Length: 239
Image 1 (tube, rainbow, N blue to C red):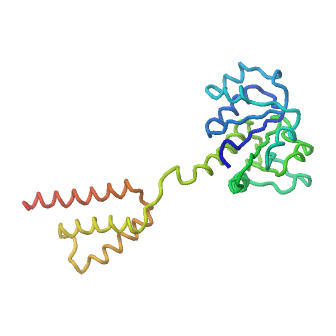
Image 2: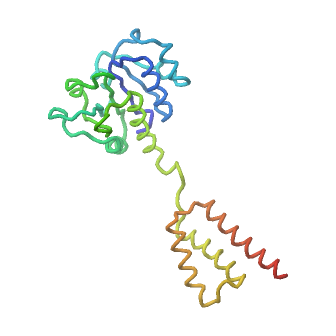
Image 3: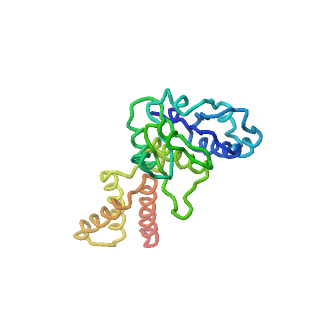
């Protein structure tokens, strides 16, 4: 699945501004498909645009439905979000658990359904979903703003899809060994240790650098430091 296959469904949201904030949360995470159970004329576009800002296009392209079942008919899985547990609500998944299930599906659309701000999803509405998802929150103040809940769910999908694109891939031991060789070569040149001590020094640096999960740029920077130190030493000694 791609992020284009993730469908956000809002069931009869009360506040127009919350819809705008939800649109912005979706855009922050490259998710653009919004479906609303309700009537478009019930919402104030100006109030939506105040919080949607540059994500107003998401509401403009939103499709309206009469029920959750209709809004998710073309999806292969639909998750109703709820913070309340009960006998009729079955096992509730955490956001990361649901995200993992969806990421392993080969194809098809996945819907995440959010209930009305005041009442959330009723048992009858949850029955129209295939699974339930809960976002853990404080027992003293557990209710999340609609857009915050949308942001959390969308972010999990965004992170899952990015995988190793975000951040960096740590260097292999083969690449680390080249940095270790550079360090020990330069330390040897400045007389930091005698030849018999080189092996212990290599083991020391290899162990530290492997645990540090170096990036390529960090390894290159270390190599430049030790090369420069050796060069300055030679210069100061008139070599």
